[in-house]
Every structure is written in C-alpha cells, then in structure tokens.
Length: 119
Image (tube, rainbow, N blue to C red; front, side, top):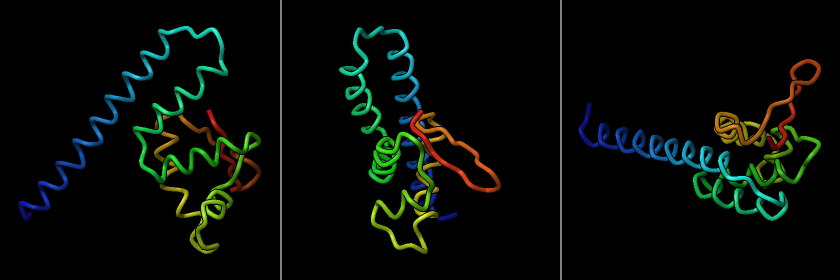
C-alpha cells in the first residue's frame, strides 16, 4: 500500500473518531441539562449538530426538518437541486449517516416505500 494512501485513510478515520467523540459528549451534556422552554433551546441544538455534519448532511437534515410529515429520498434530492435520475442515491448516503446519529428516523411504508422524519 502506498504511504500517501495509508496516511489519507488514517486521517479520515481520525476525523470520524473525533466527530463521534464530539457527538457523544454533546448527547450527554444535552441530556443532563433541563431547558425551561423548548422553542428557545431547539435552534441552539440544531446549530451545534450542524457543526459536526458535512454540508451535504446538514442540507439533507434541513430539508427533512422542513417536512414534519416525512419525505422520501427522491424528493429530498429533487429539493436539493439534483437531477431526477440521481436524486434518491444522492440523498441516501447522507441519510444513512443521519440515521446512525439518530437525527432522523426511518418510517417503512407498504412495500419498499420509505419516509424520513426528524427524530
């Protein structure tokens, strides 16, 4: 394996681990603090979460948050300005990461239809 490639892989892994550690500390600190008003506390949490996400993930999260009743991956991609043929696959990568971080939840409908909602 080339040394440059090995160095790049290690750097990517370290970035993921740093983001994971930051996410864990944010979750723990937010669970311990009790907020009096939900409406004033929610934008602060959204800004902190968006700092740990890539721009694409933040964009997908904003689109999902706008649709309280749920939205499918193709609609997310189309709303983000992607071509119709690539829209669903474009959004799927970001949605997987957001599902792992419990920022969105997946709702399975009849057959293979899926909606994503803000957690």
